Amino acid sequence: MLAMELAGRFPLEIVSVDSAQVYRGMDVGTAKPTAAEQKRVKHHLIDLIDPAQSYSAGRFRADAVRAIGEIQGRGKVPLLVGGTMLYYKALAQGIDALPAAEPGLRAQIDARAARHGWPALHADLARVDPVTAARLSPNDAQRIQRALEVWELSGQPISELRMSARPDLPFELKAFALVPEDRAELHRRIAERFDRMLKDGLVEELKTLRQRHELQASLPSMRCVGYRQAWAYLEGEYGKAELREKGIAATRQLAKRQLTWLRSLPGLEPAKRLAAALGRV
Image (cartoon, rainbow, N blue to C red; front, side, top):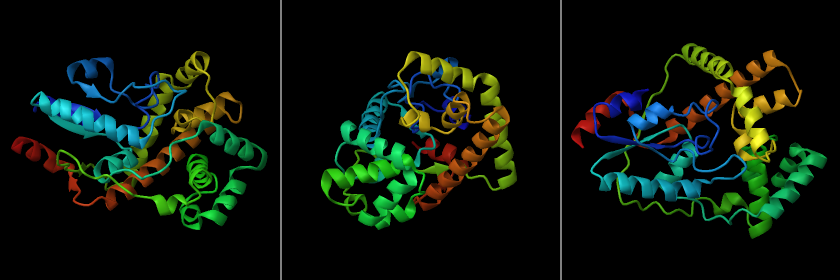
């Protein structure tokens, strides 16, 4: 909303920093800009791949650098908008020198998890990379999988390979954030937003995606908050009331993690200063 308001006052193009909006067809559960909004203001890095495919922070960095350069070449200002802090960190600080994903190995790790459970694989990770294991939940399937994959591909813990970065950018980044001060109001808005997503057809959207694509619950797209809970609902794991309850709880947890990331960013300024900064560009 703020980004669209600013785009009405300044010559902006918007670059999405959202790991879920890259997926085509995932519109309701990602609060993707409407077709009318995208027509009014040019958006970038939205609808790039199908939900059965994967996208990475490294690819985001390359795509974002290219999009920003093109926007500046048109004499406009790129406004990066979104809440995937890992993507922003990859852009601002560079990316880890990690081995590329290996689908066959990932399938083997997933098969082990199906037999023994992710907590057991978390225990395996703790034996080879206690630093990474200590910061992960025993049920954080995506990150446990990646850490074990890196260990098996490189023979080194992911914690030791972290941040061999490429921070050099051909432009300067300025970070601004809307940080809610009233937790109760934040929780109210989260519940309101999830209720609106359900009303707008989140479950029906997922049904359509499952018909169109070969999807499984372990895919990054289906681990997104909202879709993960809707998937479990469609699998009969719980009813509509619990879908709502779990979706809201997961969104609260996501917001908490985002706020933690934001507080760690150096040079972060309040969003109220953004308009003034744009006026100086």
